[in-house]
Image 1 (cartoon, rainbow, N blue to C red):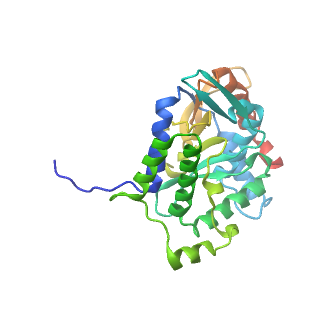
Image 2: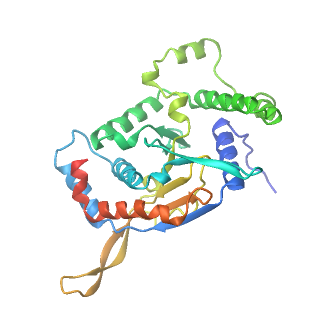
Image 3: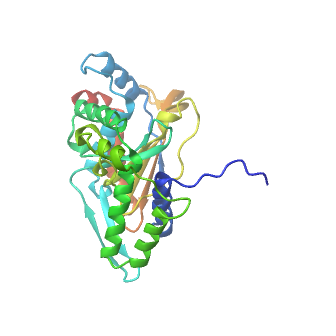
Length: 304
């Protein structure tokens, strides 16, 4: 075999590799594919942006974040963490009132990173739009390797406090020794970076894990027919959802005479995966029903 390129994993890929490996080792994943018909909903989004109600365009990503938050309010068991000790067969689940969305984000270098969007359930649509735009601004001023290293270091200290000395030691060795060691800021460069106010850059609290994970691959796959089919739950979260791009497709409608007809329509495939240790499928039903209400009566978005 002719090798083309060898790249040592940077801190972003190391963290992702570690988290997803832990996920598939420990979490029993159960998935459900939801295919809402969104023709009326997309028309309402266009109408909202043409109405002048908001000073700037509200993206479909922002509106869907708000819609998912409304769904989670109807199904609070999904907005939760599980802590389970398999050796002792005991554990507990904590549900949260506030919704902190771990949202996958395409970075300026085209890599993807999960950003913690805080308390999205309490924000109006305009507030959520401003918040997302401000987060994008902060990303431009942020050294993500520096932030992620601080999170990794905190996690290592927690492992030490739990008595997991060998695991913590291996993490430190992997981070600081060899060709694959992590390089962080030093000297004047570090001083200048930390002189940037925290209001103008992301901190570890903006990268740290939230209460639920949301991914929108639709924003990067417009015009491509396909959908997300596999998702990794990041422990201790119990639910993850991925939106694919809106796709034209034949749909069946019932006309005023009660006759079924096939007409052009639009669907937005959504993959939902939950941790079977914490949830049964029935816990998803209130979430799906709330989403159906929004898609069937999209004028609701004008009140958000």
